[in-house]
Amino acid sequence: MKELNWKDCFEPAPEAFERSVQRALQTKTEEHQMKRIIPRSVIIAFALILVLMATALAFGGDILNFLHAKDIGEVQIQKPDVKVDYAKTGILKEIRVDEAVCDGRSVHMLVTCTADPEKGSLLWGFDWDKDLSTLPFAAERAAAPQVYVLNPSQMVVETGGQRYEMMENLVKRYDSACSISMDITFFIDEMELGDSMTISAGFSLDEFVLNDDFIMPVAETVPYNVTLPVQIAKARIYEATNLPIKLENYKVLSARITRTDMGSYFEIEVEDDYDPEEYENSMVEDEEGCSVPSITLPLHGSPWFHVLDQEGKELPCMTNEWKNLDRFSDAEEWMHLLIREMIPITQIGSSYTIQPRDSGTGELFTPYILEFVER
Image (cartoon, rainbow, N blue to C red; front, side):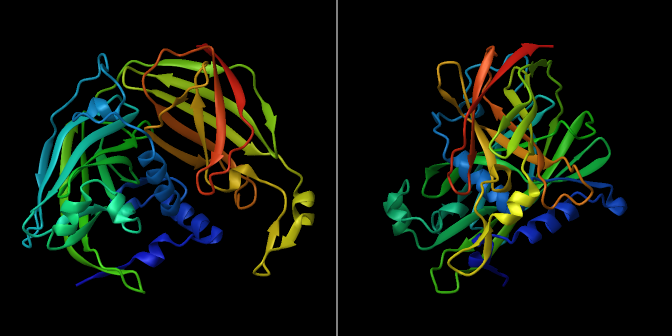
């Protein structure tokens, strides 16, 4: 029986480790024709999932609720072909993929996992250290013979004769103590798309055990495949005109909105803008005797952003990622990033307020306004 050390999973990774992981994931594996499209690191992906789960949703059952939409125009909702390799232990008795949508830029899948109530209940993987009494269906979960922690596995997408490793984002909801539904989503616009795609993924169930080592034994793993047609929706492009914008130790170089009938995609290019000598001279010792800078470098944490409309209302984020646009061949100190976020379908306004933030620390940075025109 394999064991998973949860304590190791959730401790912050050293910066050097994150950089090495990123470089390794960006390397093309010729033997398998594998392209790797993964955000900065797995640690950042954890932050992504937590950010997305914090978004308030009007859950009602179908994928439109997760998309915050009543209608998605020409984009067709699909009932994909699904194959599941259930474990002999039979704890996870059903994985359903009821609906999927694709607009050529991202994919969203409505996935539901259901456990056999006679064998145990489900706890979402990022809720394991919360007060279980505050979670939905707490009494039913407490009465179950065993609680299992549900975790998604690495995802691989095959399309156009290529294979891609993905780090998906998702939003979840508890349907019951034994059932969890989620919108699993990822970007596809940098793939060589074919007429269809097959998504290979899986879930693991870990026995919920609290101990000093944070070790939870793996009870079973259940792989599954999803095949769906690829649809390329029409898009309208809007570009920001009031750039560059200089902010605290960084600047905004470009910004674009790509709008389809399924959503609006914000892409913002940002780059460090600070004096390296001043940065080095700002080093002070922290409580543990380590040298840390006393000046703020907003791009060096977990730099996402909120999008606010012209009335100042925050628009929900449905999926996001960033990639490093290396200014130097070894961009370890200087950050040059393209940050992408998908918000619900909306009529594009002439301006939006962008509220930068560090999702790891919760720190908000100075907001700025982008003015857009259609191209």
